Length: 200
Image (cartoon, rainbow, N blue to C red; front, side, top):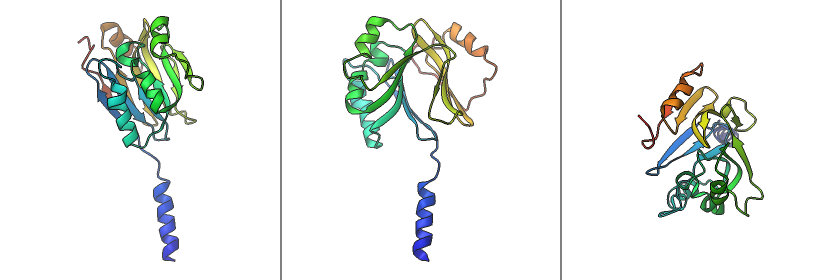
């Protein structure tokens, strides 16, 4: 009887639903974040720069490896430049990746330099515009929605995990704030605004 009770307790502990987890990395003049959804989907936002210090290798990779994360469901790059996507090639050498989302209208030369390479055969790269939505698994209440984007940059997006909502603002320029104020719901549990490029 004791063994049966022990087995049931282990099963219940092992089958507990995960909770949402947001971790923000301070990369100086760039921002990056790791998002773990309650359904188990795991996403990274931006990869940091490659030069003069490879932030993907020295900051992001150690965290992911220490957390036992060998694969990501997706990577959202808010701007295809050296500060936000420079560490992309380092990341894909060490971490498995299925999907990459970049802003619609990204500069082709920069996109090809930072995101496109010969070892991306198994990775799908998709361009996103304002209003587009990334489904994180089969649960329709777990997603990322682009709220503001222009000129090849994703300026703000919503991370929704069932009842929890986080607003991620990469740029607080006047036009971005006006776009955000035009949305019907401004109820968020967390608002993240990087200290750089805030425009405030």
